[in-house]
Length: 40
Ligand SMILES: Cc1cc2nc3c(=O)[nH]c(=O)nc-3n(C[C@H](O)[C@H](O)[C@H](O)COP(=O)(O)OP(=O)(O)OC[C@H]3O[C@@H](n4cnc5c(N)ncnc54)[C@H](O)[C@@H]3O)c2cc1C
Image (cartoon, rainbow, N blue to C red; front, top):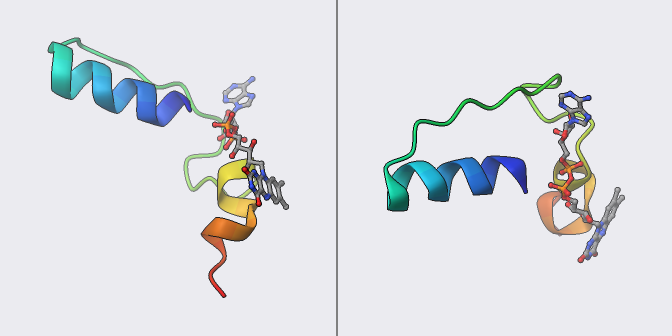
């Protein structure tokens, strides 16, 4: 959610955005762990 918000704010609204992420490879993020990110 945070990465997507940063992307759209920067791309569509020209905002200067800083993402503070403790897990830069998203190894423990729900988004990376969910079924849709792990393929069939
Ligand atoms: C095993 C599993 C299966 C799932 N399957 C489904 C499904 O089939 N369908 C569905 O709709 N949903 C599913 N979900 C739920 C869905 O994946 C999540 O609700 C969604 O991805 C959450 O996105 P998010 O961006 O809010 O959180 P996340 O992807 O977890 O991102 C949060 C980020 O914040 C960072 N963060 C947290 N605290 C801090 C801090 N203090 N400082 C800096 N960074 C911080 C974390 O490192 C992480 O990268 C599943 C979840 C899991 C775990």
